[in-house]
Figure 1 (tube, chains in turn yellow, red):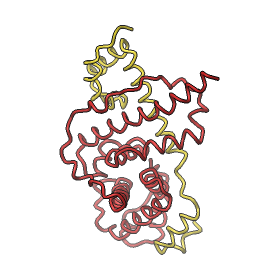
Figure 2 (spheres, one colour):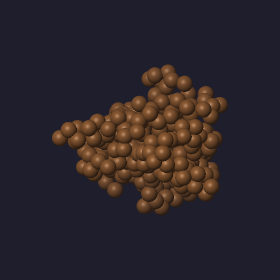
Figure 3 (cartoon, chains in turn purple, yellow):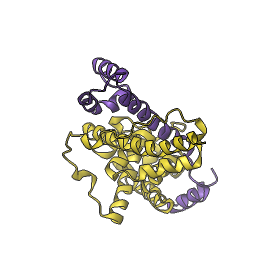
Figure 4 (tube, helix red, strand yellow):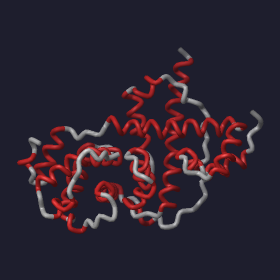
Length: 86
Length: 201
């Protein structure tokens, strides 16, 4: 990998979200891919940004339940006590 | 992310069917509680937001026009409740005061270039690692935090996030990018240290 062109690194920053979400136009994607292939730092930024988003996304799956006592208090606050057993 | 496990009848809700409302609460309380907890970090505060969200939903069901989905509508109420609570506690600048947002992302330029993706999977699954993820989110500015939670934790689209927060899609995208870049820096510090510890044995 050659010396990174830092102007390029900075100009690509604004497109990074769309790039990792797969919503960037094809020509801009190619431009990023071309740059990332040559620039080690940007390569790492793209990889670790993707990993960051994936870790948070996965963390949601593990914390989707309301604790039983919280549910009970919620039903009481809403005057729905009679449906607590459902 | 809210899964459509249960079909909720909006007609029944509008007609005041309490059993249907209890089904709505059970279908959506998990994600709403999670959003509040990630946003506020304190279980009792999250519970206040959870209760207020459904109390308001119940009071304003007639105003629900069905232009957005039920889940986006509930996320909208919950986001407002969470932001209002934070504002009461810290007197921070409200979300709507950021009408114009400069395009300059230079303060968000990456500074850390450690490749920590190669860490073994158990590093990412530890409870310490999960606490570090939560800690990093809670240190985002609140205008970025709520966007990140809705889009990347709850899995709403950019359009749904903009509907839930009454923000333009451009503003959502700017805040999302900045939140993601900040979190990447935070996680690079945390996992970079883990990587160092491993290499030292």
